[in-house]
Image (cartoon, rainbow, N blue to C red; front, side, top):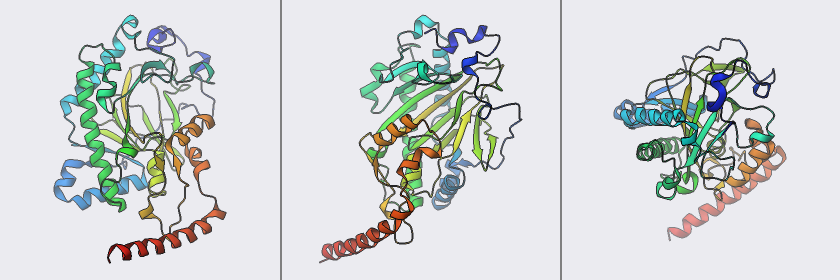
Length: 367
């Protein structure tokens, strides 16, 4: 518990050396501008006006940016506020009330910890505490969630159900936009879901520290809820840009698995979380992940003789192992799963052969 920032950061007069990032990765003093072109999609209005137009808005955002903010999304605004309030209540509790959830064992399905899962071996610590737990199916995990605040389980349960429903709607629109069959993002690709809260206390020197370093998400898709404090930045065309918080909006961020399944048509953006010296900041991350044994590969509907597969098939647990072993959390995490140039011609022959087999299958079915 003594490692938790919330246990000691308020009395820190200077930034401990173990939290100082290398020069090439620290945020520095440069004023990072907000980007006015980051997409904001009014889901209710877009769908009411024209479903096809709504799909194209989402698809373009996923292709050009890899993320977008969504408003009027169907998750109850009072519930959104209540969930943010209850997780802030959790972090404001005395240490003795949080002690039952604190753990340094990364295998635990619900735990409070600081920095990363590997605190004792990391080169530099992150300026954040994190609470995370599994939440799908809820009945399997809710008894592991924090018992305090007393309303935590009821509020987060309803939030998880509504965000899960939103994620299904968004993924179905993405699937339709890519030309995939209905229900493509089924239980295998979305069967593991995590609720995660990042708590960033005021930092003595925000120019030297980071709440989260530059990274791409390993999951399929993330639904991020920010509080009113700015802290999210996205790396685009060699520059950092700030993402302005919008009340009750979700930041929808594509993960590496979406990039693979779309065969590179959609991108997983690099982003980070900065700190500030005056205010606490809280963000809630709801990440949608494939089940460990699920095979991840470019969707077959997107592969033909002019569009070779860019990635080989792999199990999601294989990707996660490589992601953690290499500790390359950016585009390089996909390097071992890319199909090398010399294999693409062989792949194209297989695609043509498979096309013939599919035609024969269709003929057989129509007899």
